[in-house]
Image 1 (cartoon, rainbow, N blue to C red):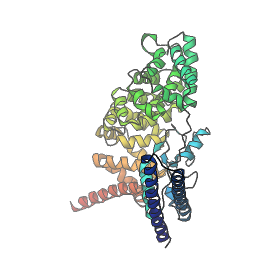
Image 2: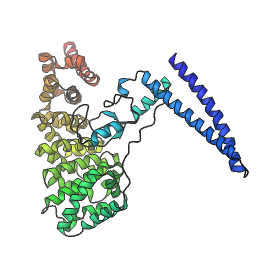
Image 3: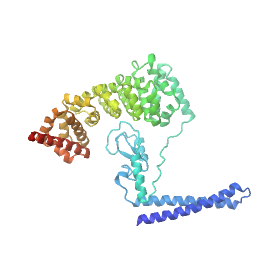
Image 4: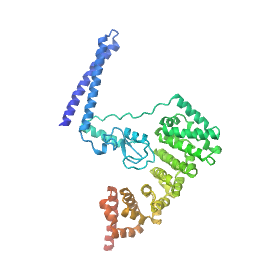
Length: 456
């Protein structure tokens, strides 16, 4: 009944609005066409326009009241505000929030996901168009007008003084070494704190080459001046966060080679930030291909192998993102990713992130062969049996299923695990939907193999 009342009220409001629009149209036509229009006509037009505005305001108010009265599905509520999301966006942790509330969280200096407490590898907010459309459809079904996204952008335009300062700093990047260091440090801070400065780099095709001048060609100061290299590479990371810069930054000829050089040398913060920059740039599929073709996976894998705690998260995130496209999976396997990742997993280092990469690589036949040769099966079975993380179990059983299909020599180990611990059966009952499906597939094939043996 509540819906009927809403739609009835809606119909009345629409009819009233149509009537007011027609009246306003007549009055405006009179004012435009007739040079002798009266002041009364102007007053009537103003009154009609005010009435139309009031009607629109009441309609929105009614919609908001109804929105409060109708129970909102939990998945459509922002975890921070507990309100219906107007502009859902995805955080680096994979969780969805309403843009203004998560922006406020991030601007307060937080670098963790407020829902999972996971440390964020970046602060890019990706529009969740699917959830937005689902919310829109639900609102229509409830007779609710979905409020427009809150205009939360408070990024002020760049003043002339700021623009002049920006150009002055870029000029210093071609001056003496002391001036280069001073300018690079300031650009690093400005591009971190002020989105408007990140945007400025996109306005000129020469800005990024000027920034990189101290590190390029025969002028390179990176070996002798590690602090300068760190500031320049970190500025590149800050620039790559700006969505409109991603394509420009990646396609600037010097950028990817200098990031690759930074992965191999420099302070550990420089190397970590170079990996983070490749990760943020790889948000675009075209950049994934470009970065992969440039050979950046090899230095990323080498840095992962070194195992520096500060860099591991950013490196793993970059490798994962790059390997989303098929051709980069082949490059990662060729460059030794399987052995490095498996060794880290066996040492219980960043198991969550690295298992996700290994599961992605398992669609490549050579990766499967390497895993079998390196003795991955017992470790993957142990994760399924002992690990408390459902995602890790899911990724492990997915890899095992692919190995099971490709290599019959592993069947004995899997059968013994099942006979001794019931590991696969338990997962087929208690795992995630995907894990259940993969586990059931293995069990079915094991049963068929036993039946065939008995029949023979």
